[in-house]
Length: 155
Image (cartoon, rainbow, N blue to C red; front, side, top):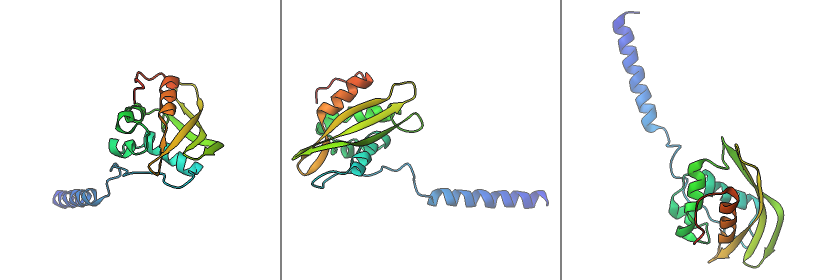
């Protein structure tokens, strides 16, 4: 192969690479929104909601829609997400039973761990507000205290 052929091949490969990169889907895009609206939330839905809150870079507005404290409480999941707590590669989380359900309140057990921290196991509560199941303020505050985050619970 001559230098000219190599140069033309390199230019063609660079052009093809640029075209692929421009047309490739953005995997870091906003994950959108998430809401639980059924009469009784399932463990799968509760797990997905916790994943949405602490493992995704979703917008503050989307996360606020899943919190009893709304926009004022977003500081908690945003901080947990930014620190990388309770998500790969540093940690994990899972919601399990036993569950309780009474009208507009539902409870389950959250298990979460992060490198260098003890595993957290705590009963957490969701409240149904305007047809949507939202993580209760008392559970956010208990989590803040358990993990030792410097966040005031005034939401």
